Structures are given as structure tokens and as C-alpha cells.
Image (tube, rainbow, N blue to C red; front, side, top):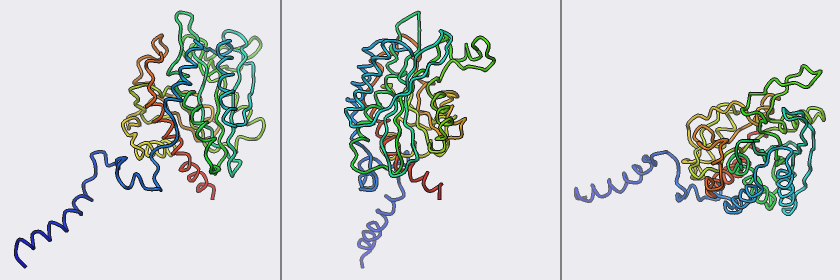
Length: 336
């Protein structure tokens, strides 16, 4: 065989091996590779970012929506009507906590998607906005974006033909926001005649955990995913420090596999208290998907609809939906 033919044959054999050894810069398969498009690796869902954005718009149009307000009552009615239109069973849990502004009517909303098991995965958002007397706060990102995303997730999950392995509770928490100027300003306020510490925040999530304990149902909840402030047009979701590591790993890897590596990054998000915290304290694995450290409009009058993008809502909606089967598998494997 001539030297030229030998060279040609060697090159033909070596080239495929060299390509196998040269992944993309981020060592992740692109959405166009055969692996990403194989039946075993879904990279998108029926989640519609524009539909989710319309839910965000509707909430913003109601105006500021602090707990106990007429505007939040209208928002709650809208959420419930939409959930029922998807064919979901919806329940409400009304409670009357004492706040620095006195007693407030609050209502948690829960939509259920029954699974093969009665064990539960909670996917959640808070739908109230923070009270400000100085300016009009419509909370497009802080409250509306996560709630709109959860509503669209409800539509997609309700339409799936295959029953999930575990039961899903889609929970809309009331009263996440503090009534005082800052989260911890009124941390130790008490009612007359009481010495019990009453935090001025996370009213709805704390109430739900209390009810789960009271009804001896806490052990049913195997994981909790919280969405909060995740609709910014320049979305960057760093890995939350105060969350269960395995949940973070599953969701962030799923995001990368789905082509959302630019949105789900490997920085660190230092939020140490949110609606997932009462669940962590109760021994339930929980995850907070939130962009706070790099969002400049938090709790300002500029947290408005122009800061939100449908593509960001879809990135989160797709990622969480695609993560659920993996989370179910992990939970069931740990139970064996």
C-alpha cells in the first residue's frame, strides 16, 4: 500500500476518535446533537412562555397585592378559575394570622395532580406582594413571575396522559412578604399576653407545615420546590446555598441538558430564608429557585412588567417539568 493510502486510512480512523475527545466548551451536549434529541432525553415541554407571561400581566394589572387586600382576593379568584379550567381539583386553606398590622385574612391555594403514590412533591410560589406605603409596588418578578409560571406548569402537567409516579401539589402561598419595612424588622413582635416569637414573613408556608404536622401528613411530602423571582429578562439562577444539595444537582443538570446552562449557572445564591425554609426545618428536602443577588429591582417601584421575558419563564417551566421524573426516581430509589 502506498504511503499516501496509509496516511489516508490512518486519518480516517483517527478523525472520529478525535471528535469524540473534543466536547463543547461547557462539556454539555447541544440541543442539536443526536443525544439531546434521542427519545430518552427530552429537552423541551409543552410549557408556553407567552401563556405564562399573560398570567404575569394579569396579576400586575390588578395592582399591588399585599396579603389581605381586595386586589389579592381578585388575584386568587383568577388563579383558582384558571386551575379549575385545566380540570384540576383545587382546595383553599384560609387562616387569620396576627401581623404587625393586625389580623389578616390569608388563603393558601392548592391544586392536586394525583399520582400512582400518595407521596407528594410540592411545587410552589407565593402570590402576594410586599406592602409599601411609599410607592406602588406591583411585583412583576417578585410574586407574579413565579405564580404565572406555576399556573402554566399546572396546565401542562394536567394535560399529560401518563400519571406521575408521585402526587403533585401545586401550592400558591399567601403571606410570604413581611409587612414591616424589612424582612427581619418585626421578627420578634408578639401579641398581648403571648411570649411566642412571631416572624413577620412566610405566613402561608409556615401555616402549611403546621397543618401537615397537625394532620400527621408531613411524612407524605418527599420534596418541595419553590419558585420565586425567576422571570427576569436577564435570567441568572445561581445555585442556592440553603437548599437540599441533591435537588439542586438534579435541577441544574436537567437545565444544562435542556440547553438552559446560561440561565442556570454555577454561582452561589445566598438567600437564607424563603417559603422553603419551614419545610427544611421540618426535615423535608426543599429547593429555592430564585434570582435575588443579581436582580437590581427587588422591592422597588421598578419591579415592573418590562423586566419579565417569556423565554425566562419557559426556561424555568421546562426545567422543573423535565426534572420531576428524575426527582421521583431518586425519591423512590431512596425508599427501597
